Amino acid sequence: MENSEIDAGHPDESDLLAAQLNSGIPLIRAGRARLRLALPDYRDKIPSTHRLAFQSLCKVYEVTALMVDELRKEVPCREELLAEYEEMCRSIEDDAVAMLEGKTSDRWF
Image 1 (spheres, rainbow, N blue to C red):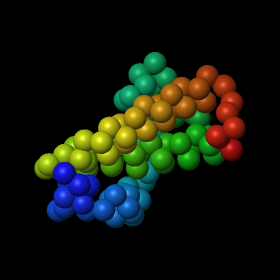
Image 2: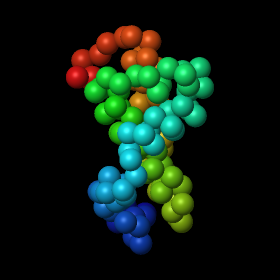
Image 3: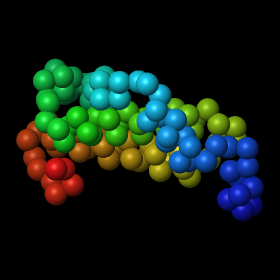
């Protein structure tokens, strides 16, 4: 089956992302809350971390997690796209842990 057949009836990925970014949700605050749930060992440290890079990470995490939520609702499920966004969430969580532990990376500004 071709991708166009699989994606038929589903919104375009860029449209979904735009909807998440324009949802009116305070993305940084929501991302922090989501990270606190995902990373219980760092729950107390997350609210007091105010570096710009960490705030950006929180925002991206929230948008990515919202995409996962939306993709999980789709019937039929776009499994490859869902798996890609779930992997992005895990990668962001790993970056958050590294930041909270004081590590550095060229990816963070």
